[in-house]
Length: 165
Image (cartoon, rainbow, N blue to C red; front, side):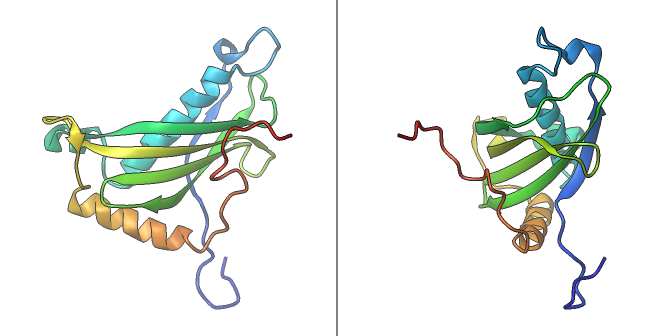
């Protein structure tokens, strides 16, 4: 689909989907909170594969990516058998860090069930210190960031936990 400027419309990445399995259902009859984290984790891994940092790359370069902060918003319940789709938006990066935002939907265009915002760091596994991303993934990250800069910032991005009075 094209926008009125003739450029292709920017969209979040759609790299991961799953169906809610019986083991994920809790005593309230809906998906339990750790499984939202699991689904978001698989979506994050799919993003790493997408930018060229798959398992083989990480083993060869002796690098990895660690999540150092996560904020989750649980918005709607999900039930057994439902199809879950995750949209991923890259909100920003520098030479060693990424901010990812995942939106979990019921089906490809259904309501938003949950969101998470993640800060991740690139790590040299030999020194266990942060390190710049390698050239090829860094170029992919920069390209995605430019594309996603055309998207609106998600409403739940940048939130903090607080009690409003």
